[in-house]
Image (spheres, rainbow, N blue to C red):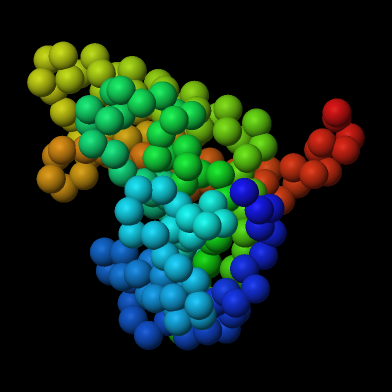
Length: 191
């Protein structure tokens, strides 16, 4: 896999978003923009920019809701350890497009390398804690709307009730973004 540090023909800061956020439409708009710029978007399992191993995410800067990484069916969660999961694949590198509700404009776009073991360890721990609870609940046919992992990630039931979305609390994601930007500095000083 190539080491992607920037999307050359990405979505420029200052680009106006033609519609207000509603049910993931801004994420779809971002994918459409990348297609127009010549990128292939994977609509199946795995990262959106599969050839580069990069997931595309959009985020309204005024939002404090959890960040959705991806969704899996209940049985797939139970049977799949983090390191073999679709969630892990989508949480290695992310192209994050931040935008403001004020003027519907892109304020920042950046690749985040999330492969640092500190980051992966926190997400793995959250996924596995939630996975264990989902498996225990499944034995009783119980599917609560929310399954706590750790303070770094949780599962929330999808509308069809056949699976869960893995979501990272806003505060934890801010820490992850900071750790991602500073991973090189920490490695130089502490390894």
